[in-house]
Length: 226
Image (cartoon, rainbow, N blue to C red; front, top):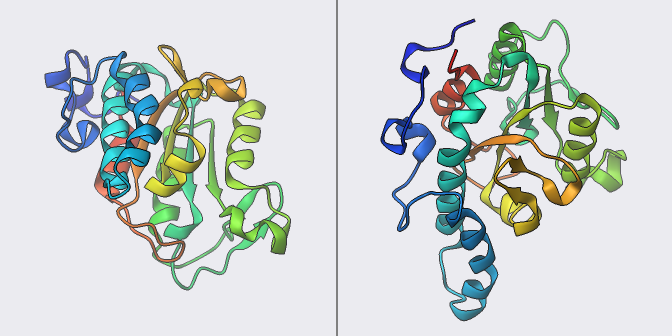
């Protein structure tokens, strides 16, 4: 598929779609700014305990998305993975939790569920894989892998070139906001991997009935420079 026309031939920063660039940033989102933003995070938190950590994380994500977006859009759908959080599921979700597969949607579920809608969209486009990630808080109860271990294992198994992830600011800063994870070629370097990332942050940090900008998520799933 060719993808939406407004995403073809992505060029300079000014041409990066607004839903990728995110909130206004105090610096230019070049490659050099990414490790600087990450390295400064913890010292700044110590110096200014009242700092708006969520806003800072959104700046980091906006810089990273802007930097990596042209390469992400050039990766074919068949070489991408999508990770969605289980906190976005329908409140009446009848799904089961599998220790290896995460959240497993019933084949004939009739609920109007946005998570299933995004999963089905990615599958129709030909994504390599779509996974619904369960909170690590259920690790002791269900035996499911902790979310970071779950993500890393599936990326190692499927070997995508690009990954689109959806998570909250707290999860990102606690688990992934590490300079060793970043390189000019991609992210998750601290785990021996290198994938071209895009991130859609949840609008809340609830582990139940959370929310996201569904239109931005859909556009990033469809994004293609072809």
